[in-house]
Image 1: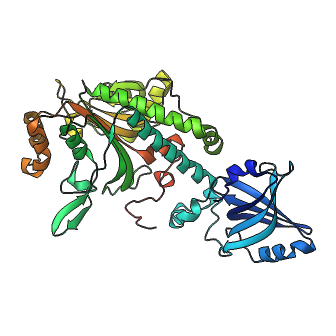
Image 2: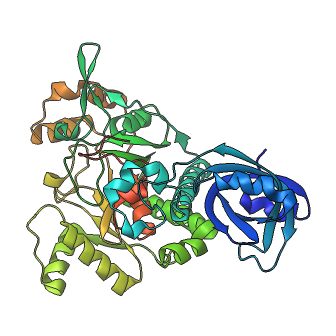
Image 3: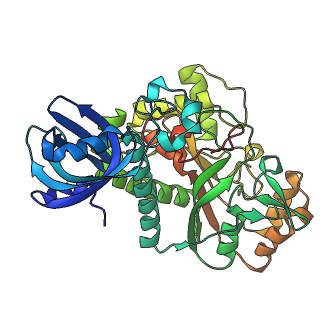
Length: 436
């Protein structure tokens, strides 16, 4: 098995075999220094230019940066070496792959490279240590989200990604031919989560892809996204859903900070968000009033929030409550899907969660009473026939329930202070990008 750079301390004084990318070569008159890199760190290889090492020097004369090597030698302690105070004195070098002499761009200098070029050569762009840290954090985040759910007795489901009907809006769907029948790539597991509620599963979660045919070129949209979805039965109201999400996010983000928070702050220069403070909460109508009175700003949308309004509300939450999070609740029915429950004032029992200036979650209590659900379908000018399979769930008893969904990569982008979701996604898909 390969020995990784972060495991080397256990092998001091031993003959080992180390494999990695060639990051740097310094060829001096009497010594050749070689820096090897793997996904966990770096190791200096020191070759003294003496007769018995001539074969090793000759091998390195034909090796370019970013080639891969397998080096056998003795791992020695050397306090003068900046990378962990150790070096490998080689006895054998095997070139396992050769890199072209000239890279298409200098991936080590992110700010000096065109983003589209970096995305074209994403496999090179991802070699930077900041990207390794980012996607290690994504792994920790997803594991923590899943762990919290399992510890709270949720079932994990895997809903189909090819669907015969839309869960949200037909305008945002990718359609495909399904053996002569029209089908769609799933934009949300919403209907299937609610099917699980009808099945008596009580509490379910899913982490998986969703597809949105939005011709949007913003810094925080993508056409293929990684979503975490939650649905919970037997709730009293949508505040139960918000309470769960707040605790769930605090746990998962806390695990990310506990594991790699120090390195995040050092590499990305962004302080951690305060997880001790309660998330702020404000109704949609009060939010609109606050924006007008405190910030003298009136958005063009009467039934929804603009990006500028989201930024101002997060600014307010930070100043008044010391938190980067704010729930905005009870949106007008005009701005929400047909399946959101309505309150006595005719507004939805729903919320958005804003974080550092951007919406990251939409959640709600669902309408589970079939007579009211049908009424709301018609009010949205949707035919009942088009939702036959969905409405069938509600004919045989369904508990009061609610849930939410959150985009994993948008959350990562904001946690790391990254200015574009393209940088926080392993392989980005957008309106103008289908490759690599």
